[in-house]
Image (cartoon, rainbow, N blue to C red; front, top):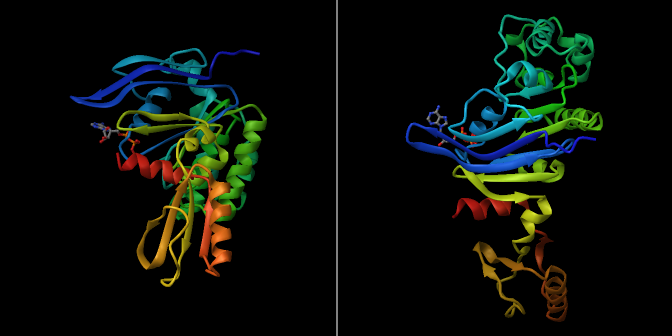
Length: 294
Ligand SMILES: Nc1ncnc2c1ncn2[C@@H]1O[C@H](COP(=O)(O)OP(=O)(O)OP(=O)(O)O)[C@@H](O)[C@H]1O
């Protein structure tokens, strides 16, 4: 089996006039991986993806997709399924005509009926795009990533506007694509989805990676949290805690189990109820907040 990464980005730079949008970015995505490119607004995610997808030329650096320049569109493009934030299908086309158009544009082979079934739009095949609901439009956008079972799939905010059932359905389809060997690059502002789904995450901030690694690697550097509400009459806590409004307390710790044990024993000894008690490891949201405040 080939060990060449599906995506290989080396010292990528992009400037818009004198604005340096992507700065010396390097990363690789291996075959079969789900890689989430996350970041603050304006971090440079879209710019980076546009270069990898072959829509934009970098100012400097090298990008290889399947070992080739993404600007070599005739070779690389048929292997990519790109679900943009908005595909821009003509509002006058029907759903079926739009799906057929994907086949013509990507030059991949598939059956339109199969794709309609996979994205649950068979019952809307004859409906014009202009008459679809927001979630249905999003499922039609998703057809671009499904048509012809591409080897590399880009999902740009794929679940925005989808109800919970449609989200689960979409992820089931993505799982199937991955079972067939597809590599997936995801961008999303739903950090929980990235945390659950991604093998690795690149966290961008101001044009460069702030952190990169597995979710475990990203969260390991931050303390776990214990949150609860304390009655006003409670005696002094056994551990240092930040006091927030209305008796809310926050303990940050690298020894979650030990500190939780200390706290629970203290509450029992003093007959103090810790209301709304929550304890858990750092979530990706917390990593993001620490980033935004830098
Ligand atoms: N065509 C352009 N001309 C000039 N500046 C641009 C252009 N496109 C993007 N930028 C700037 O480059 C920076 C990176 O933009 P980009 O769209 O790549 O960020 P992003 O991480 O995708 O952001 P978001 O999460 O807000 O969509 C931003 O500051 C943006 O204003």
